[in-house]
Image 1 (tube, one colour):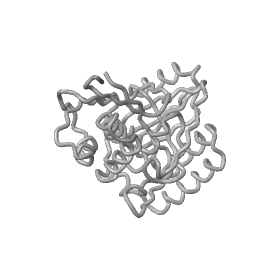
Image 2: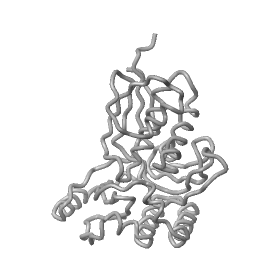
Image 3: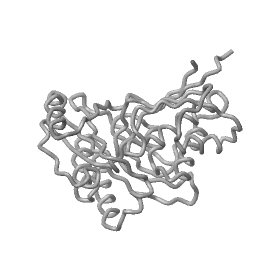
Amino acid sequence: MRPGVACADAPHHITSIFLPVKGRTLEETGSIGVGLAVEPRLTVCTGPSRNHRISTIHRVIRLLGIDHASIQANTPLPPGSGYAVSAASAISAALALTSGRRAVREAYLTAHVAEILEGTGLGDVLAISCGVGVVLRRRPGAPGVGSADCIQLPGTVSILSVETGRMHTSRMLSDLNSSFLEKAEKYLDKIFDEPTFESFAYYSELFSKESGMLYAALGGRELPRIPGKIAVYGKKKVVVFLVERDRLGDAVEVLEEWGVRPRLLEASSGPPRVWWA
């Protein structure tokens, strides 16, 4: 017999460029875009207590038709800033609660629909289902409906992030205008035509600056000169720095002198996982 505790974990995802797409159904609704799949991973286990306040987990439970579900969620990154905590939580909860009983595709579909209904995201579930390095969401929708490709990050690149506050996804989406959408489409086309890390880094920073997303994530502050910077971009209230690994210590020192405590993230090593404890 299997032990009674099922666990699942998932990487986080930080979008750099996205273009919302409203489909005929919730499964087809989502976004195309690019971003980074990063770790530490978020973990959900079935267990004796419910120690979270994440709306997508509650929505997943209702969508699965489970009357009594007790789960534990370990969230190493803060929700509401731009790390796609809601999507990682929804995926992990759906996989843990359906492990061995339903198809993995159904779990992903449930997580995607939960995100749409809760208004917490559009394409993060699809991105996390790919879950390695740079993720290119080429067709919108839930995993199995939409499509995404992953590109490994070069070993010479490190990822730093800084949070400057919180912002609900609905607020970010309400601020979109025609200029934002035109820029997103233009730069996504360039990355999809040349799907490399270098293309992702260059156009992500360019879009982030031109669209105002970097300015918003920084709260209007001017960035210092970051040693070894390859690229920088903003999503909601997270600022992401891609830096040369051999200059990582120098970059951290400058950011700390600037008055922030950067997080060291790792490129995700793979898609969500399920196991029994």
